[in-house]
Image 1 (tube, rainbow, N blue to C red):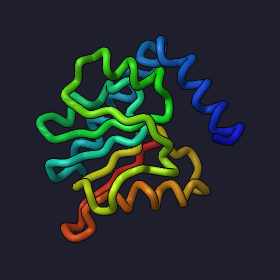
Image 2: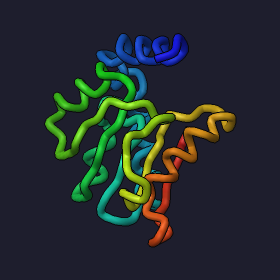
Image 3: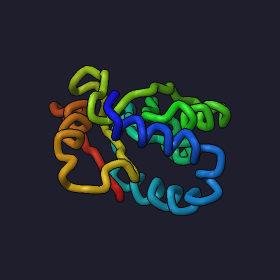
Image 4: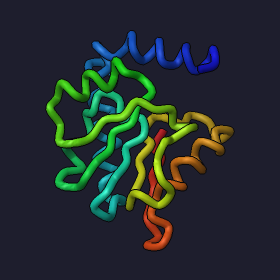
Length: 136
């Protein structure tokens, strides 16, 4: 893991306990907006954070991915009906075309992160013209 990635992990691990208090409302609004674009029964939520938006995706199968174990611990504490995975959005350990839709909400802040965007797009079901949504 490079120095920049370690900094991101450390930042979100430290923020996990107060993340919902600081950004919860904003994140819920983003998930509600995303629902209009989500189709299919298998969704990967890259950068799921504390899992605040996962209940909105029910009853679909949801895989929650975050680089921060601290954030995922908060998501697990919510007793969500979703699988959890610690991983970097730039190196997703998923088979191509394994999900109908992919979310990346408040993950990619700059368009220069195109390589990571491609990685997320690759896990979407291309044969059915699946969708993926990125909200900043």
